[in-house]
Image 1 (tube, helix red, strand yellow):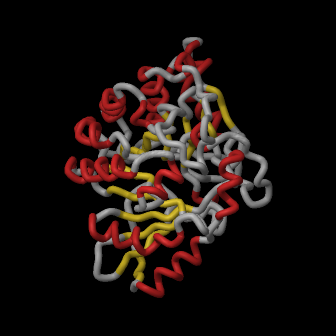
Image 2 (cartoon, rainbow, N blue to C red):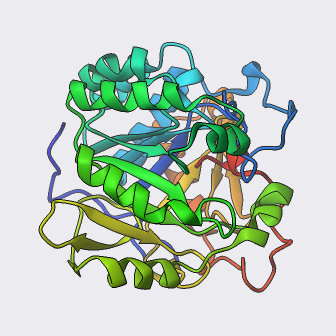
Length: 333
């Protein structure tokens, strides 16, 4: 990875937050159908002609890097369904100023791609895994748990560190597996992160009927384990504790019960070139048309700086749960 240049510029939003993190969606398609993310039978995907090409993605990320953005996470949909993804990773890894390159995945294809992705420059990964029970996994995602387990073991062998397991904690769905997931992560040396459901689109609002306040989960774990303060490198919003006597860090991502908007350091770039300033708002800026009209690098940086001025102070998931109508897969995880 390229080392950070201390003299680099700073990209700041209207509320003084430094924007140093891009979540880049390379596709809105996925090979699973998690009920809280994408409706079963959904087919309203972006057409390939509207996808940013690898060259266009490289230009946009390079412009962000020139403005001081250091962290880049590759997301989807499921990013590994994008053809030749390791080639794109290799190109992005070569950009000056990108100091942290990571990937979010459901791991169904990691058995094949773990080593090529690691060799291309991905150093750490997040894997979505809500259950350790095969039948329940099929109910939640429509897929097969054994593919994910194969992918996770391939990722361990390839050398990714850390490997973070993201578990959406849901009342009456998988809350009986909280301790099982802790033990699984202790056994394999993974980091564990619990996530609250968010009312993103109709699927997310329905899933919010199973909302579980993570303060309850933390207290439940504290009753069983000795929890001590913990930290993890990265640009995300999780608040960590460590299980005493182990290397396990447990993170809590709480967009509803304890939102982290005041420290938000990110924007999302969708596969069609739309910059979304907030996961829970509709503030956005279109880059694809500018790129295809022949915008210069300097003009591209100016456009990005203008887009950041549109970033709102906070989401309104609690106050206006019906506000955000797009699905999570459309925005980028």
